[in-house]
Amino acid sequence: MSDLPEPFKIKMVERIKLHPREKREALIRQAGYNVFMLKAEDVFIDLLTDSGTSAMSDEQWAGMMATTQAYAGSESYYSLEKAMKDIFGFKYFIPVHQGRAAENILFSTMLFPGSYVPNNMHFDTTEANVLRNKGIPVNLVVEEAYDTQKILPFKGNMDVSKLEAFIKEKTPEKIPLIMVTITNNSAGGQPVSMQNIREVSEIAQKYGIPFFIDACRFAENCFFIKQREEGYQNKSVKEIAREIFSYADGCTFSGKKEALTNIGGMLCTNIEELYEKFKNLAITIEGFITYGGLACRELEAMAIGLYEAIDEEYQAYRHRQIEYLAKLLRDEGVPIVEPPGGHAVYIDAKRFLPHIPPEEFPGQALVVQLYIEAGVRAVEIGSSCFGKVDEKTGKFVPARMELVRLSIPRRTYTDNHLRYVAKSLIKLYKEREQIRGLRRVYAPRLLGHFTAKFEPIN
Ligand SMILES: *Cc1c(COP(=O)(O)O)cnc(C)c1O
Image 1 (cartoon, helix red, strand yellow):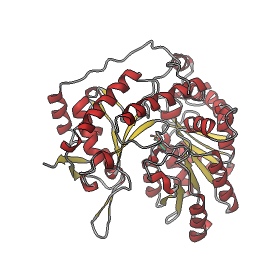
Image 2 (cartoon, rainbow, N blue to C red):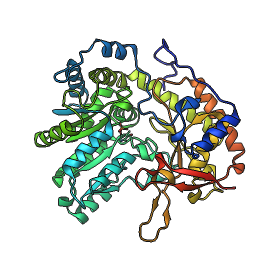
Image 3 (cartoon, protein in one colour):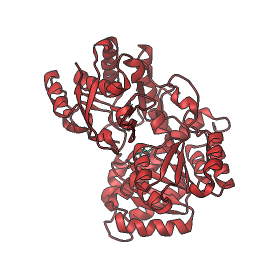
Image 4 (tube, rainbow, N blue to C red):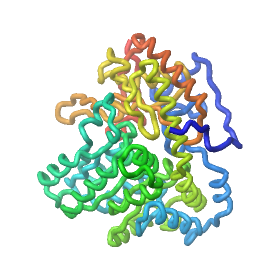
């Protein structure tokens, strides 16, 4: 891969500050050992999420300043429509305030009680929105996705034979839509191949089921296809994106990821009848369709950001930076999910802390230690996030994987920041036997990890 430096220079900065260790210990205790409860200003390097944390470009800021602010018919709506049609190629779209609003509108319109939504893997808000609409989310990712050491080019793929067997078992009438998430966030940001998307699309068509893509990180996925899939080396990211979306009936999209903006999203489709329904609901819960619950300037920033996201020099830099962090950790034996994904490096906390059982949240324990050690905020993607309490037996059912995600905000941190993160983690790895588990003392039923509270086990 290219070893060129960042394809940008910095013309505005934000001060960051590292508190003394004792203060970090006090702050994390007050936060109930949950990093979602920390103030951002108390974090030195914030790798909680790549969502809404991108640094915007001078061109985005200029576009935002220049666009009109209007209830109806803002020019920024037309800029975004033009970018969406050019890059995604769908007939209809609705801007929304973020990806989960698109999910809410999609599932409120299409689901019915007891209906199933197969996905390679649901993201947490996607799963919660399916459940809230009385649907049943089903993850049919390839089995290898759960093997954190297996190196495969497209570990995010849907298992198409499982999908077809599932449709036959449940009958197509009970499946209002099929989804594929690119990249597969919950499996470590792993990409999905073009061939897999094509096969899912063929199955969806065969059974007359609409096919939607959760397109949050479509451009990173396209870049992986360009690098790894036969026949795509000489295609542009945009051509690859157009081909992906040509297989789908629509998509949900979070602008907070790959429109390089701090807020925003879209719901797109080719199905006119669905668009009419989406539109009515969007007006009721989001806002008129030419602003979608956003200030018009945000639509302009998304329109410009979409082009910056498909820029191949940008994608090469982005992928190189993720690989840089992965390599620093890998070289010192820190167990990471291999190969690294498109937006984050994931640590396998089960292997990092084998002495902590899932009931004591090894991922969360590592997240807490990393904050105490270095002021770095990561996030647990394990049993705090995806573990369940069986309603009949009251027994805790852990998640299949215990991961810690180090998301890399786009264009925000330099390699020096990442070297500091790696150094801190390597130190913790050497002292790993001293790290203790946590007891969860509070968690709501849905999306529990955002507000859960923990206590250290001594
Ligand atoms: C972030 C994300 C969403 C939800 O988007 P928001 O803008 O955060 O509401 C949905 N799916 C995936 C895969 C995501 O990463």
